Image: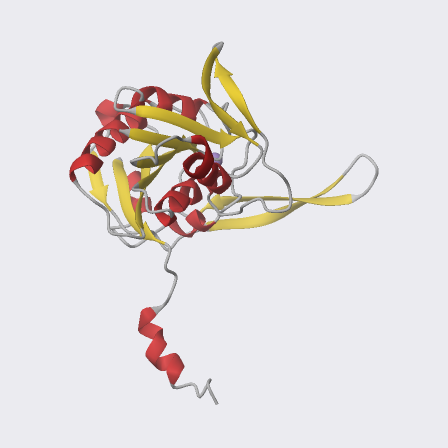
Length: 252
Ligand code: MN
């Protein structure tokens, strides 16, 4: 199995290393990831600048390719230029921080997997719902299990899996729920501050709204101690609204 791995936390993040190490037993892993932290870049790609690619080491040993671009750039580069054979699977993660609800629109992690799916490769985004004291072992093990399943099963064209895990010991995880994307998002605001030169600047911050009445949502699965697996797609058309919009006399 040829596996391409990326994530927006950058090639030197702990989570991408944990994922690559675990998947190394399941297949032939190629890591192509941003050279720096690129979280929340969404599906951005680089078109006005060149992409520099350099080998990256981990503990003195070759680990993967560091690229001066976004996760979507890295997946394109990996598939179209770096890998000799097209991958059988694209994995994006393990991200530090959950990718839940509407926040996935901003996610570089999810966009790495989306790019894989756009290019016709079975793709999975995987995130750990914490920003502190991460334990990536359960997520890495689940990624290995899912990759095994991907050999036997197939995803519909244009569909990818968005996986999130609670940051608890593997023994405490209650199981896996197939979920839908929650309709919650960040409640964000801007901290207004003053720099050393007396100029005003703003820093976005916020908290994640975890109140969600929808039992089947990704957010509630995590809250209840389950791994959430949400099938997502990138066709954003609101099919139900098409006929009503036709009646708006919009074409006259
Ligand atoms: Mn990230």
